Length: 419
Ligand code: UD1
Image 1 (cartoon, protein in one colour):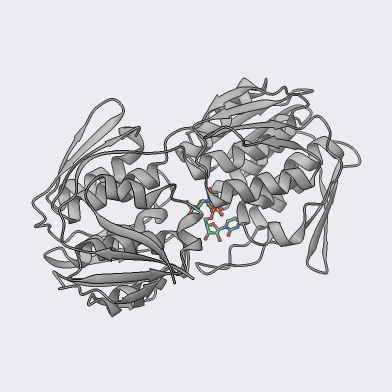
Image 2 (tube, rainbow, N blue to C red):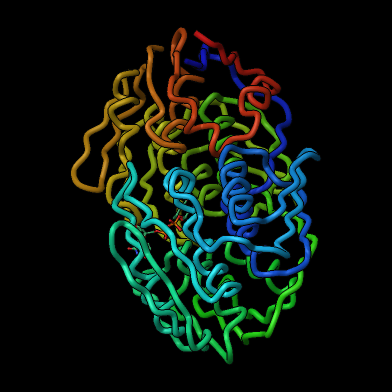
């Protein structure tokens, strides 16, 4: 078993470089299934989730080359299967998005129902309702979804019950090759949606309005492969911004789009940190004396749910009572009990948590309960007295590339050891 050993108490200083966005690259790799010619992606973070989706594509007969660092080429000329393997699909929810491109290319697909996960039930009703509106026949049974489009895919106007990120991406991909015009209303506006739309347009699609609540798609007959550079990971960047603020550090975060960080930047400033924005970098300075703030997660441009655990770790050591409310997922407070083991003073009621700070954190053994909860443990350990040992690192490996090396580069005392 591997674990992280972190000794807290150092103010982080220096420069740290952010990689490509996990949540942008996964749907983009999947979208390359729509083309019969190859695509080449740059700034690809070499993460466990990227390896998993590459394996899913290989099982479908697609050629995926990841021999060059941070570059991926995908050649989807020949798709030989319309059924991605259960064991891979079940390890990563985002792989469900292959359903749409498979229907578009093969006219049919079969995929296992994605289960719930630690942070919530995560239904797929919005995806399936939209697919049916586009002419896809869906049958569910024995844990599988079978989808057929015997009469082809036809454009439609669809109102989303909730601006689901995955459903917006999924329907955009299918509608790109539909007959006629599709209008998607009340859709997600996350930067990753814009990145996918830009890639689809480079492939020859006609997608307009991505980044707003209404996306219009004029279907085209076919798409071609394209070269594309993935946007920086706003969640990785945000995690390092918080690391700088809570350790009383002075850190320049490079390869970041300040526009994407606005909801977090506002909260860090409110808490008393100095945040300076440049074109593609952010400078965070703090004396470590932070004030309590209230945070409510919301779809973009609201505060991201994927930063909720990390900001809670920061608020544990901020002065005063903070309230954190999670509105996107129904069960995303699993980091709370782990933070409390380190000395945090938190009470939860439903989807809200009250945090009384500053708590004196002390190192102990904690575990990662999911990806971002794992990041919160690392952040707490960076300010805890003594050594913290963090286990269940596979969660962190899904979303943070070289986190040990990157944090060590700005002065953290962190190592990964095998027991
Ligand atoms: C994506 C991100 C994830 C992030 C989340 C919200 C990727 C690979 N993952 O996940 O990191 O936390 O956006 O920003 O990009 N819902 C339904 N029915 C549906 C679909 C969703 O009720 O058909 C609900 C979900 O249960 C959840 C909420 O909508 O409560 C948000 O989910 P969604 O935006 O779809 O998240 P993902 O795309 O799964």
